[in-house]
Image (cartoon, rainbow, N blue to C red; front, side):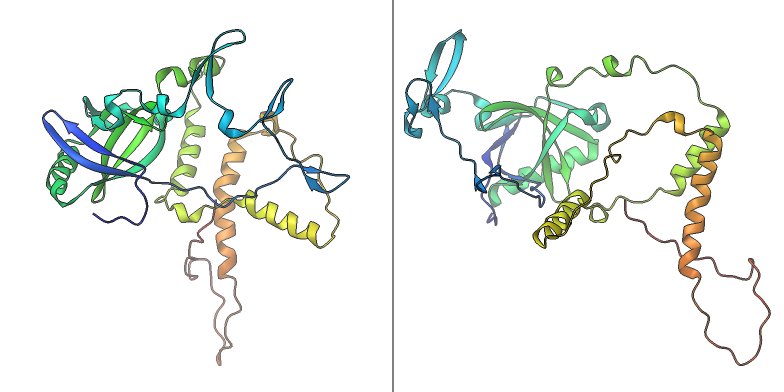
Length: 300
């Protein structure tokens, strides 16, 4: 099966006695970002870094090995071939050892997604069977896979015609929520406040469309850079990073009501266009006569 990109991993998925040759490709890519260099202001030149050994000075890259410090100042040295030679079955085989309902895995454990495809036409039949079995049972497969120097817990689920593998964080990589949430009280919210908040959420509910979001911070940085290039003075607001305080909301009920009313007022603006001239006078339209304004889609 020809693919446009180079496979990130090649191996097999094993389910009991069934082995399915597959290839894995990154499902995400880095977004456009602004890269900064460190500059020596007096000279305007870039700051460079060298690999330096105390008492010896700069050294060549081919003289550098990886070392594990087993006691202060003492290291076990390993070269890349020795590290690559570590025997681990999950370097080439993802064995599905358990199946769980998707909702049983908290979102905080998911780390990075990859697309999984059959390696060739012969593998496609078994691949499709596994995909549809997962879809029918609404289960997620779990296993472990070695990628780029470490072994990950991973999940496997259907995605269109293929599968998506997601690396998972281990339990000891996730901070316990209780240590952060313990000071939040057990109070039950007022029913009227809860109804208003629920109505506000429902009013702003819709289908997720990733294309509606973009990195506005990058846009702002580009604008800042362009203004600096043209020699314009850039004003900074020292108060921008002041943290909002909960005490600023004097009346939560009134604030929620205003939140519900505000979008409605904003939506009426696009409808306030000049009407075309009419030959005969017409009666003034009442609120009931006017067509409802089209809902303006807002970007987050």
